[in-house]
Length: 250
Image (cartoon, rainbow, N blue to C red; front, side):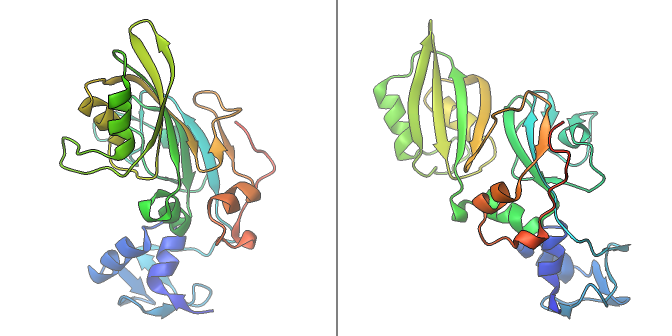
């Protein structure tokens, strides 16, 4: 069955559909040896599609992984200065891409997949998938500061955040533990929000993405998502495209 080329690239984890269009426009994609164009109809069972000279291979199913990212690892796909990469923690032959990002000193739930379309739906704020964080911050956060976080605020990078769900979990001497739930995924957003109210986080952990939590995963451990979990996060996903290996936790 023929599909638009950018959709095929997205499904194979090359890039989101929009970024795939850019890759095609730059002439980096060929179909049967010819430079491709955006919107071109292709059938991977019959056409030879290559990106930067590397040919795409038809695959029967996509892989979805939940990882408890420890601190000290980065979500980049390549190490430029000797950084430890999260992909080193997940021992699968497929090339997996992180869904969103966590900075080096933030731990917690990170999803990885080779399904570009699913990745985009989970990461893009338009789909409003909740991400919940636990933060331990310096000082005692007061009611007015909590309200600022809830209402949305202007960050130091000039971005305005959407409203968030925020509540104090407990107090540790002069420090405060808070839960913050957002539907955005801006770079270092939670840290910038807390810095804006002058209570920087010295511990930050993502505890939930949509209905998925860290339950059962210690730092550095990972598991495959179940078919139900994949569909709970994106009910438009075709159940027949989901791979659920027998060995599920590592």
